[in-house]
Every structure is written in structure tokens, then in C-alpha cells.
Image 1 (tube, rainbow, N blue to C red):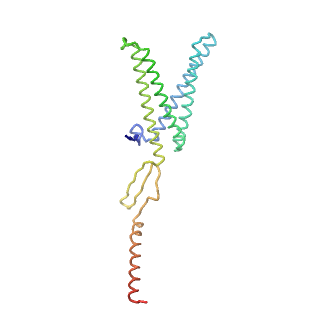
Image 2 (image 1 turned 180 degrees about the vertical axis):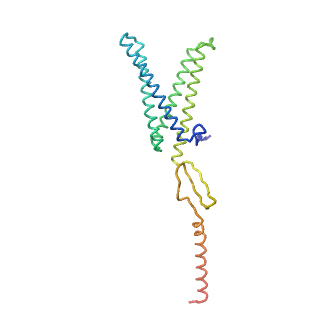
Image 3 (image 1 turned 135 degrees about the vertical axis):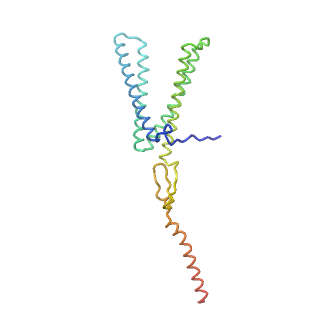
Length: 225
């Protein structure tokens, strides 16, 4: 059974698609910068503490924070690429960001499944309403919400790419001037304009040829060779 993914024309059902995506990208950049700043400050504190009193657990913390900073740097670079492509209406950076987000969705889904397995393994069935159980539910809700938001914006990016490629469009007819115009995305195709004069020329040309043929036939009958 074949199903098609939905195509959106507005972001959040109210904002124009491209401007909504650019706004979301700028907010994402701000969030990435703030989170990276916080992690960098925390990493600096761990390094200072480790230099004073070496503790083996600090090495694991520094490694984890370093990996997170690298991930945030990659996220920042790809988001900047998307912002540039969105302003210039360039398809290549937008396609790269689209593929990157799909890869991140797969990674997020895999991490969520691993985390669920680990938390269910350590959970005590006799303490269902304990703090640990509520923490598990909140963590799963956070992962699920993040995954839905990522999928939604992936569909928005896909819709914007289709719009710039001209995969869908609309047409309208101006009854006052008897002209027809076909629009695809943000472009206008001039060859699709049809005026009354063109239609009249197309109608009169065959009739004129037919009259000429009839006159030649009559002359042939009157003056046989």
C-alpha cells in the first residue's frame, strides 16, 4: 500500500513557509550557542577541579562534555548552512540540511530505544509510582516530543524544497483581460500567457486558407486549361 507524505504551505499553519523555517533556524542557533556556552563553562570547572584534585570520574565527564560540544558544533554549522541557503533560495544547502536532519532522527530514535531498554532493566516493578518511574516517564515524553518536532520540521523543509523546485503550483485566469497565467512556487512562466489576439489569429488562419482554396477551385472551373 502506497502513501504520500503531506506537503505544507505554511509553518505552524499561520506563518509563510520559508520565513517560518528561517525563524526556527535562528532560534535553534541561539539555543545551540547558549547550550554550548554552558557546557564549555562546566567543562572549564571540571578541568580546574581535576588539576587540583585528580578524580577518575572527572575524566568521564570531560569526555562526555567534549562529545556534546562536537555535536553542537556540527549542529551549528549545518544550521548556518541552512540559513544561508534559505535566504538565497539555494536548493543544495537545504537538501544537505534535510538529509542531516533525517540522519539525526534515526540517531535520536536509536538512542531512545537504548535508553528505554536500560531504564526498564534497572526499574523495580514493585515501585511503579516511585520517583524513578516518574523520571522515566518524563524522559520518554521529552524524547517523544523532540522526535515529533524534528519530523515535523523535516516535512516543512521537504515542502520548501518542493516549492523551490516547482513541484507544485497554482493557476488563475484574469477574466477582465481574458488572460491565463500559471504560477509555480515563486516563479511566473511567461509562455503560459494566452490573449484574445492569439486566439483570434488561430481561429482566422484556417478560415482564410479555406477561402483561398475555394477561390482557386472556382477559377479552375471557369477557366479550364
